[in-house]
Length: 219
Image (cartoon, rainbow, N blue to C red; front, top):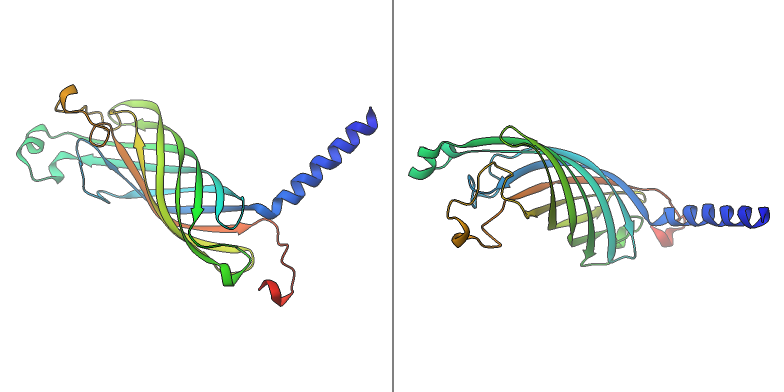
C-alpha cells in the first residue's frame, strides 16, 4: 500500500511538472466603465482604473482557458448627460468591486508564446464571472455576469507575451447603479434592462516553463 501511495504521489508531481509548459501567468491593467440607466449607450464613459492578474492554460495553439481576478470601479452622474429627465432626476453613484472570471479563448491564428513566427493572433473570449461590489448607493451586492470580448496577443520573447483586450460584462441584475428600469416591466428587454460593465486594458504574460531550448528551429 505504501508503494502505491509513493507511485501515485510521483505520478502527480510528474503530471504537474509536465503541465507547466502549458501555463502562462500574467498581470493586467486598464480601465473599467458602466452602462445602465444613467449611461444607456456611451462607450468608455467615465473610465476608472482597473487592475488584476490571471493564469492561462493553453489547450493548444488555438484554444485556451483563462481564470482571472480584476479589481474595478465604476461611476455615473445624470448631470453628465444633456436630457431634461436626467437633469431633473440628478442621480449619481460610484462603486468598486472585485471580479473573478473563467473564460474560453479562441485564437484566430496559431499562437505560441515561445515561437515568434507564430507569436501573433487576434482572439475572442467568453465565459462566466462573479463579482462582489460595494456601492455608495446600494452598500453591498454579489452578482453573476457573462463576460465576452476580443483582443490581440503578441510574443515579445521565448517566455514573455503581451496584448490588449476589450470586453463587456452582462449582468442579470438592475441594481448596480441603484436605479431600476424607468419604463417598468413593459419596457424590459435583454439588451436594455439590467446593467452592464466593461473592461479594456493591456496585459503581460509569462510562460512558466520553457521547453523550446536554444535550437534555432524553435526561435
